[in-house]
Image (tube, rainbow, N blue to C red):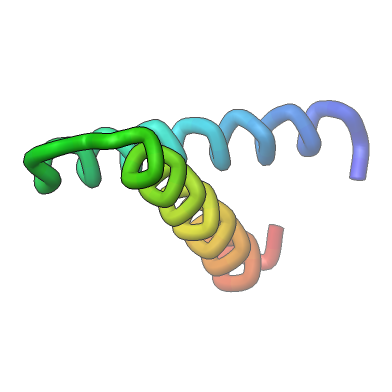
Length: 60
C-alpha cells in the first residue's frame, strides 16, 4: 500500500469511529468512565469491521 491509500484508510476508520461513537452516545443515558471506554472500544471495533468489509467488497 502506498501512503495515500494508508491515509485514506486511517481517515475512513476515524470517520466511522466518530459516527459510531456519536450514535452510541445518543442511545446511552449515563456515561461513566468505564462505559465511555467500552463504548469507544466497541465503536473502534465496529469501525474496523466496516472498513474491512467495504475493502473486501470493493476489491480495494
